[in-house]
Length: 248
Ligand SMILES: [Zn+2]
Image (cartoon, rainbow, N blue to C red; front, top):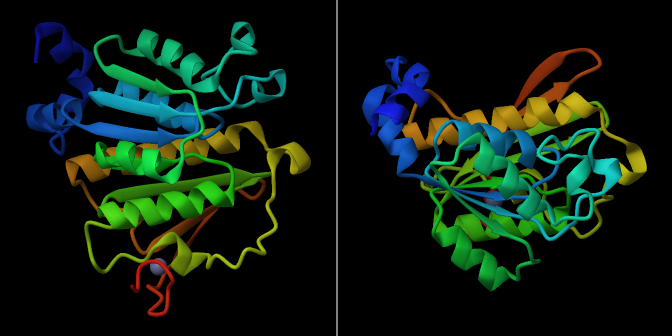
């Protein structure tokens, strides 16, 4: 690490759980973030500022004025710009010493698998079941950790599916893909602005902990947050022996 990096990351290096060697690990790691919206904003900002050496961020959508209430990566002058490109512009200012790779197109399963194969941790910041199910299958097939988050209205949830471990349940153990899920979309139901900040920041914390192997991850647990009552609940996720994805 150069002198300016020692200064930049000094408050991490001071933590006995991280120290110099942990910060080096972060600098040598690669995170894949799917979605540069409400969740992808805090996730990518914290990962960039923390010195994750390589960040790949994917989003095929363009910034719309209705995004700006909660998607803090983007600003007024990025309206109409692709979200991954807008994110990359912002993150390069946060930390010019790391490599940010924006992917501005919709990826098919094969392309997504190739990109995920390069990453140490996959972070699902998408807003739809199709992507969540696809990422679950890809992460399982590659035996990579997946940090999953979702937020709508005043509610949010986070979990970790750590496929480096055989005992980890998967997203489909929790929500089997029956093709009948009613998708709750922000555009129809609304979303309380800070909820994506709280859930996304928690996802960033889990991703960094996974890289550093600190403490206990949310593997096998679903953390549920309600902002109206300001309550957190934990539900145990059991591996489904007949799961279509992870029991095979
Ligand atoms: Zn499963």
